[in-house]
Length: 298
Image (cartoon, rainbow, N blue to C red; front, side, top):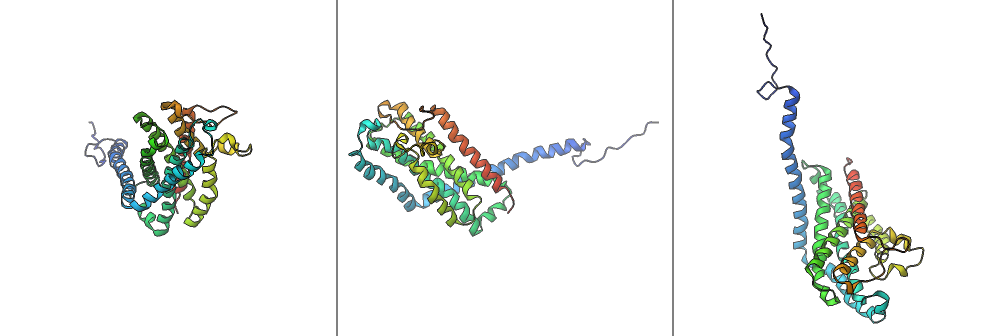
């Protein structure tokens, strides 16, 4: 006589093994969780875009700064610096550096907002959301990158005033370079801010670090004119690679506007795609390090 054994209930009503049921439940949970993460990213980016739309006066003032540099400083020094030494007029040479200055400020503000959100308690409320901490940091980085690129794109409207042609392909290349530079600066700003608790400390570090990096970027004068001890510092400066990517993008579409004085390794310029890859790698590594620090419970 055969003895029949009743299958143990597994919550699925089918009598399937428990392992298969658990796998089915996990598979059913994945899409909602992914949807939550994507919605959180969208909300954080939308928050930064709303702030950009509402804070028109601060945004206009931030854009005014590089414009004054471009036309007042550039116009004054254009009469003193011969075109032959740069390959182009000084204002044309200065334009990529001003694009970098334009995207630099809003990208750095992402790090300041992380610290102020921690102080005000807003960050604690965000951490209560059913999403990963890495998603919150990635959303802040994506929003900062987009806002910085939008502000840089506004300055592209002045390209014709400095002798750069209004070429759609050239503008696409410059936008791509600004996205890359904005992402890297935003990630570095987050990596610096994630371990700080006071915005005053962040501002002090910026004063010590960002201005030297800007002058060592080649945005104001050729890197070859730097003293010998400063050139190795310029070779590891991410801003120098950002300015170089923008300047060499202009040279691709407007060879007559090609300027000398970029990053050099052993007397030779590295390939453009290698410079872009190094800039992207620096941003990714900085973001991964910031995410690891941010994921630690406070």
